Length: 150
Image (cartoon, rainbow, N blue to C red; front, top):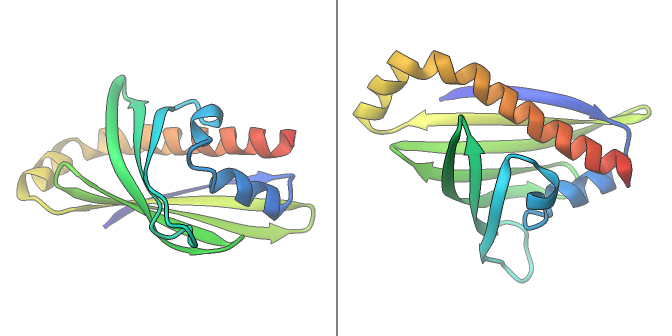
């Protein structure tokens, strides 16, 4: 699995940041790359199992993916999963507290399943790594802006 990790330091409480990053439906109002969020399944008693359809514009293209929460430790971390175009995509958010700030880290991974996806990635993947990292950092900067404004 190929992974990218990015982090940002935020001058806000862990609780404030957690509320923002777990408000999936509200992310459309905070993260500029997200165009639309539609909740598909919402468990009554758990964040794990939340499933949604997210539409984003990346690389000049609009794409819609179904994502879901696979695990979570309140105020500490959660992971998502999506399966699309011959790959499994995972994202993990981690919060670590330091003196005076909280570090929010995002780890994005892609496991290529289909042979054609592996071939295309081998030929063009290097072009998308930098752009993907930039998009992940933009998401974190948008979260930081929202958290520090509260």
